[in-house]
Image (tube, rainbow, N blue to C red; front, side, top):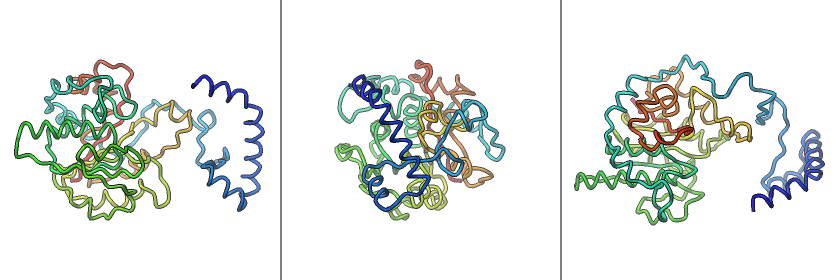
Length: 314
């Protein structure tokens, strides 16, 4: 099927070129009422390769490798405490029991495309170690499966243990209700902020949303309205963060226009209210042995780029 689509796309290259020229012309003279209606209906909007536009042209704009560490002098990576926390995890036997490939519906397996080894293992470690009483996920999927596994094991260890697991998921994952979690079918920016103030010490706010800064969007709501009002001791997760490196090469060169990481970096600069406890890509590149020792599946899978990021409200 992919080969057929690729053949058709090549066959249509002359039309693509002519369409691109026409769209560039429309954008340069201004988008009219009817053009706006068409663009919003089809979900396509032409963007100029121009410094005022959000288009990323890597060959034109990048000045060094995306895999280079950037200077972030205002951020304390809190490396010693990151390593101390890693050393406290002792759940490798449990992590080795989860399958690599899909074995059933609504069950976790490592070789998935959204929340794989490293990230998922660390999430399991966090829940097993801190034993949160409440977890709120903004965005859900394979992380939800792994979180449920850790919560279930906590209950096996302690029959009195209880954890309310809520998922804010307006767009996807139709089978979520079958997991027994609390499901909120709303866009997060429409959820009352008091919902997040129910989180207490060692509870988890798990953010894996659109990754895009938009006016009145989810990411701005999370960083500017939720994070400042969380109670002390709340543990916060954010996915697809690679600081101090940029986003992955394949994402940037394929025009994945995410920018959440840079907002997070600005948020953390000179921020004395939050401290980093697990910057997984940083650990994987700079303290690979220590990280791999606590993530046994990641240790066996070369080339993986973990992207989970953990911090705690002081």
